[in-house]
Length: 303
Image (tube, rainbow, N blue to C red; front, side, top):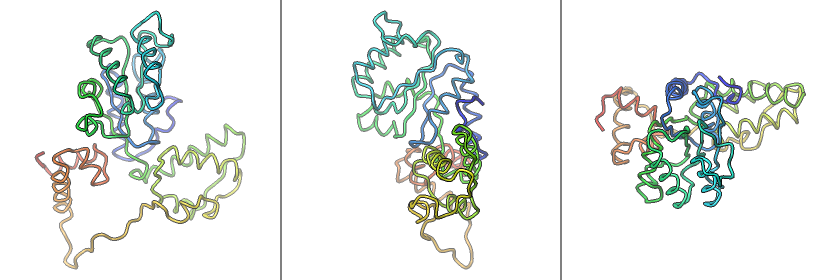
C-alpha cells in the first residue's frame, strides 16, 4: 500500500473485496468509476489505483470537477491531448487523470471530455479515473449527465462503503490517524477511554473518514498526551446526533422468524420500489451496491 493512501485500512469484508477488485483493475488501463459518499476516501482509492498501475512513475493529476470553469477545463483537456497551447504541462503521456466528482461538470465540459475520449479511442495515452458521490445513472435519466460519457467512464465501478457500514474498522482508523497526526505535530498522542470509544462506535459519521480525521487532529492538539473522555468529544457525538442506533421498527414475534427469508423478501421489495435499479435499491436498504449484489446472488433473485 502506498504512503499516499493511508486511509485504506480495515478488515470489513465489503472493504476487503473492494481492495481486491482495486488491485485487479489497477493492472489494466480500463476506466474506473469510484462511487462513494463525500469524505469516504475516493481520492485515496484513486491514488492507490495509480500507485499499483504501470503509470505509477507518471503524474497523477486530480481535477476538482465541482470547482473548475469550462475555460480551465478546456485548457486542461488541451494538455491531455498534447496541445501546444495547454497550460497544463504536468499532463504528459502516461499520466493518470482523476476527475473528482465528475457528476458536477457542466454540460459543456461533459461534451469536451466525451469528444476527447471518443477521438482518442481505446488508447487515449493517459489513464482515466473518475469519482462521484451522486448516482450517475439517475442523473443520466434526468438528462443532467451525458449518457455517452457515462458509458465511457463507467466501465468498472468500485463502491466505497461509508464509515458507518464499517464499524469494525473505526478503532483501527482512529488509532492510525491519531498516531500519524501526533507524529506530524511532534506532540504526544492522546488516548481514548473505553466510554469515549463506545460513543464513537455509535455515531453515524456523516462526514465519513474526513470527519474522523478532523476529530483526530483536534484531539491531537487539544488533548495531547491525555485521555479523551466522553465530555471531550464534540456535542454531536456526545448527544447521539445521527446515531447509528435507530428506533425499533420491527418487533420480533415470540415464535421467531426465518431471517434469511425475510432478508430476501426485503431485497425483492426494495428492487420493486426502485424499478429494478440496483443502486437505488441499495440506498433504500442502506447497503453498498456491492453488498446488495452479493445478497441478490445469495438469494438467487432475478432482476
